[in-house]
Length: 165
Image 1 (tube, rainbow, N blue to C red):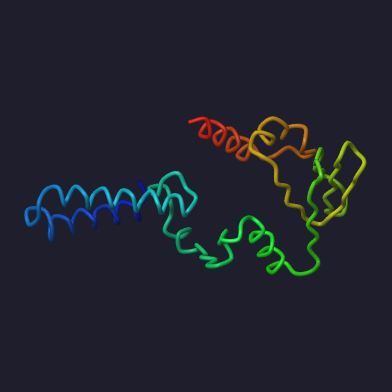
Image 2 (cartoon, rainbow, N blue to C red; image 1 turned 45 degrees about the vertical axis):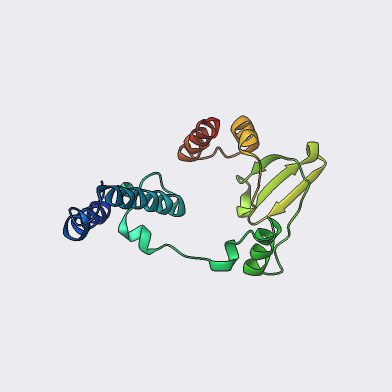
C-alpha cells in the first residue's frame, strides 16, 4: 500500500470516527464506506491502474484532464477529430487497411506498414495501429517485426483473461 493511499484510507477512517460513527445509524456509515469504495474504484479506472495502493502521488499529480477532447458524444469519430486538431494537417488517417506487418527496425527511424497482403506499403515517422484485442493477442508475434516489449505482451494476455470474465 502506498503512503498516499494509506493516508487517504486513514483520513477517511478518522473522519468516520470523528464525525459519523456513533452519531448516525449504522446503515448510514455502511453506505459511506460503500461510497468511498466506489470512489476508489472510479479513481483506479480513471487513473488506469489496478490499485490506487500502487499509484504514486507523483504520477497522480501528472494526470491531465482533457475535458471535451475525450468526449464520445458524437461517437468514435470525435476521437479522430480530436487527434486531427491536436496533431495538425500533416496527419494522415487511413481506414480499411488490413495491417499485416509493422516494421520499426528500418534505418532512419521510419516505420513501414505492410497491408492488404503486401499490395500496400506505407512509410511514416509514427503510426497508430488499431486492431481488436483478439487480433492483437493472436497475431502480435508476427505482426510486429521488432517484438513488442515483454511488459506489453503480458498486458495483452492479462486483458484477454479479464475480457473472458
